[in-house]
Length: 113
Image (cartoon, rainbow, N blue to C red):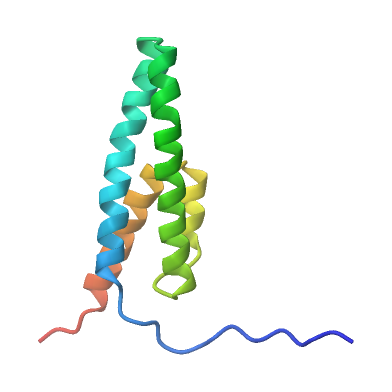
């Protein structure tokens, strides 16, 4: 005997959590700068010690970004496309692009007064 799958919840999405989105943007920018520094030390300066230090910090930032976008998707703040682009782009680029898209959609949806 198998249990019937629950249908996906329908209805209006809750208002956009701008605080969560702001944290994603700030962390995305910081992690993006860190990634550029990491790439510099990996390919230009060729410093293994810097790569060994900065690599895990970038990895933790990536995991936090992914976790925040998954949290927003599971709270129905946005679709699962946001965590997907963060995953595919290794974090910073996807989080910044997702932020821009969501802010433009929020502005487009606001009622004109």
